[in-house]
Image 1 (tube, rainbow, N blue to C red):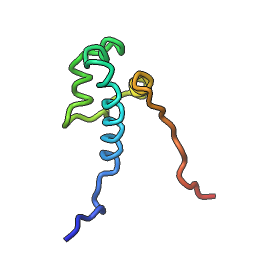
Image 2 (tube, one colour; image 1 turned 180 degrees about the vertical axis):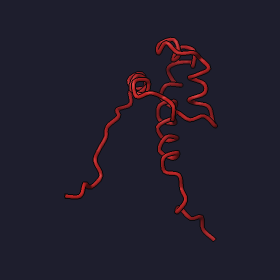
Image 3 (cartoon, helix red, strand yellow; image 1 turned 120 degrees about the vertical axis):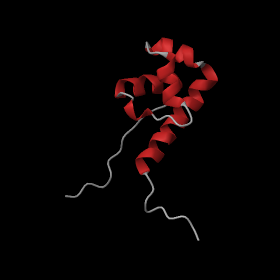
Image 4 (cartoon, rainbow, N blue to C red; image 1 turned 90 degrees about the vertical axis):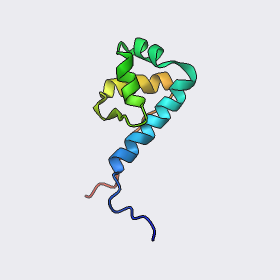
Length: 84
């Protein structure tokens, strides 16, 4: 029997996608220590954000935008259909 998507955690799926995009780009250019130094954070925090089981859910928007800038990733928001 096929897997159902009814109970899929969309938030976790989205966060993991963002994490993979950022880390995939950053890891080609910088070590975790270099990333941490540029952001003024501890290496442990960066490692936690990007570890296999880690999640950036506690990351501030400021940190997210700084990481995106470093990675060359553009973040944009679009509205879903808004009822009249």
